[in-house]
Image 1 (cartoon, one colour):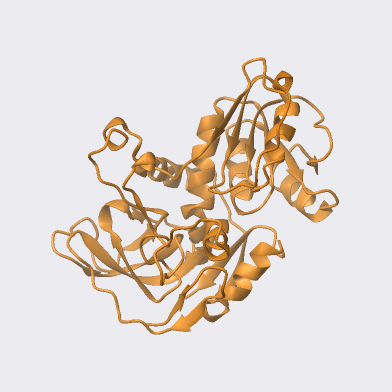
Image 2 (cartoon, rainbow, N blue to C red):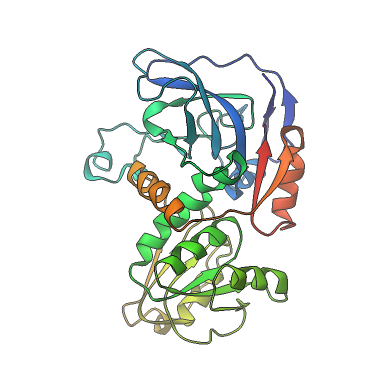
Length: 327
């Protein structure tokens, strides 16, 4: 099969033809149609996340068809269209797994990090952690739902019932969650880099009530905020923009250092938090909700052989929503 492989961190992916993978017990073999390009992939390639399996096939927003099944794999029929997300396996035994928090499993394994992912023509996955793709979503449009959508949805849940919600950074995840939040009757305030008028207009086109610079003040105090950009300074910025009782959630797996800030901007029962991974319940709920909104994803499509260009464009913010590899 064709694949793009990470041999060493901080180096470009290289084209390769590794042997076709074979599904083990409880696994399915997926013929990959598309795979989303996520900022987490970039953190892995750039060395911000330090312990990936190497060599590694990245990619954890996989959409494809089941073309093989291992022993005791009975959940999907051959030909079924499935999505494979970041969470690839959990132990089911630790105190996190047994308390509904499998996203925190100490032995959890992750697609495109511990397990070869979707920058390839074929991938194997534990069938328990695969999900049917809602009808009506072309493969390219479905791929961003599997991380940008799922992780964003978990972050939105952690913000609670915030009516006035701020989104800091408006890319793949925020453009999906903006649609969800507006559907829920929330008021969305989008914060972008100073001068990013195109990004601000994009946010308004998706229902944001206001869009402006993250360096400036919000027009109203926020009841909650999600920080999508991996910029630590945005956490205290969101605190300063928030009303008492607000929850500020980081939706990233990696973030630059959060600078010191005065206790005064945290006081008033404001809370800082983070999202780690996802649960299968998150996936089931979100993939039922997305077609009801309906969520529409905007994607920039690249051929598999141009995965490095897609990562470079993501690093330089050359597209406004999500990137997808057409396998």
